[in-house]
Amino acid sequence: MIVVTAPTGQIGSQVLGTLLENGASVRVIARDPARLPEHVRARVEVVKGSHGDIDVVTEAFTGADAVFWLVAADPRAESLEAAFVDFTRPACEAWEKQGVARVVGISALGRGVAKNAGHVSASLAMDDLIAGTGVSYRALTMPTFMDNLLWQAESIGKDGVFFAPLSGERKAPTCATRDIAAVAAGLLLDLSWHGVAEVPVLGPEDLSQNDLAEIMTEVLGRPVRYQQVPMDAFRATLLENGRSEAMAQGMADMMAAKDAGLDNAEPRTPQATTPTTFRQWCEEVLKPAVS
Image 1: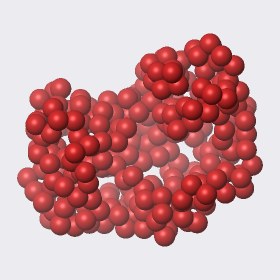
Image 2: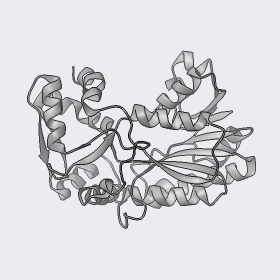
Image 3: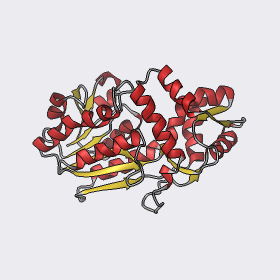
Image 4: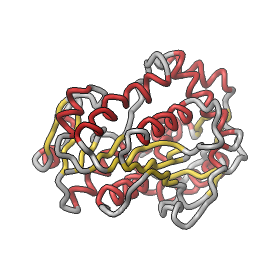
């Protein structure tokens, strides 16, 4: 039995789909099971509630062999520790009590590099908490997701511009959520691994924000430009959109660390290089979203 958390999110839904395609027995934890497609609900066991709730995870992890773990951090959390580490504590307790063998989690690049990198530092602290339970753990460590651009699809399509507080010229890896999900599902279906390790997922290429704009221009057939925004303005926008002070500052600290080269510290290897190019992602995901 494999338990999938966040099964209706970008990554979790794709992990779930791959597991079902491979005939796995799957149980999901969902706050709102109605958001699961009907054909999926018919093939999985559903535990309703939050995977930060001890009663919910105790029920969900009973008899489970492996767990896909993803924290969708509460944008209004009072602290990064509360959003990542404290949220994960009930699951760690349940894994130990229920004898779960393997956990695959979504984390971030930055171990040995990040000191005050906001959400990244909190993700790494979460990894340490999970590893301390004795469960075999694989932390998938990623740079920025290509799919994060989707929240700016309207601006890209309507105004031909996207924004971030990053330098336009710094080249860095980006990865597609489809590739993250594929790596996660592969590990969940593999019974051979043990111990604790990080698994970088770097995409196939390093690109700057200006490179992204050039590729979007070519794929969409209309001019797209990148505009760097001041970090204070970025933080203020997050606050205006409902994030707490702690979570907005955590995002700002993470972006500052990325702009200083955080995502470039991990050496690119064949094992860490995943297939979806940014151009392919634009053609198959961004272009339909913009249209």
